[in-house]
Length: 278
Ligand SMILES: C[S@@+](CC[C@H](N)C(=O)[O-])C[C@H]1O[C@@H](n2cnc3c(N)ncnc32)[C@H](O)[C@@H]1O
Image (cartoon, rainbow, N blue to C red; front, side):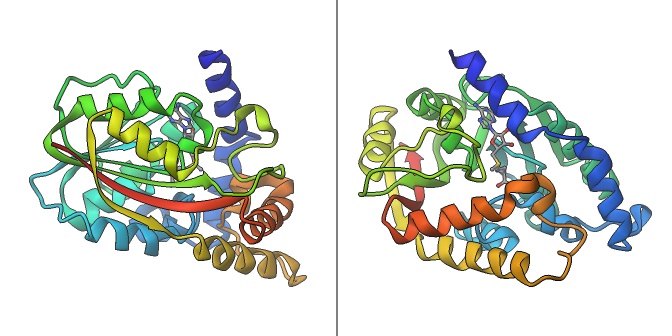
């Protein structure tokens, strides 16, 4: 079941000649591949609500320095990993189970001259291919929604962290009201969607032995982010060439409309947790 689910998740994300479409869009956006800056890719490589601004805000609150070694679990196209390597200057590793994303992450990292500080590994959050205590911090943004066995994910995160290391989780959660609508950005059907509510998150983190330092409800950002996307898609003018629509396909608008409806109805929340390995 676990592997079947992971294959289905990878098929959801690694769709449809992704590399060709992304490089065509980069060229249409007028970007020069020989002088690409990490920020140029932000319209596409920050696949979470709030984009690069959310990354900057959350990472700055972690107090990281050059000496840190950080793992991003479910790194997507690697925007957060390049942010860590480029802006903080620390060593960062991204892990993801979608082969197309890992390949693009490596290519983007080489094009932005960050390969000496950032690397990428194809693998599962449920069996991290790293030694115990290999990292001083870990982050995971908008990846838990595809993972049924989050208890194992957090135990694995605990194992690879050094004592005192922080884990930051930024995820869509189940809200107080029942029911979900599909498609959503992380799944076309309920088969690969696995949301936990805030209580379940607290219990899973505690049973992995984490201490929760911060818990925030960021649900208003769901409305802000997806209303802006729907307005852009309804405007009748073509979207900017480089954008999340390349990752979300022909149902991008329905996905954003469902996110708005579910946030308004209390069916989903957006949560941020900072936990520490004591
Ligand atoms: C919505 S994307 C977010 C990507 C990235 N964190 C970001 O914020 O731009 C979710 C990512 O989680 C990855 N993912 C889902 N389940 C995973 C698992 N069990 N192990 C590793 N990666 C996983 C997917 O392949 C996908 O790249």
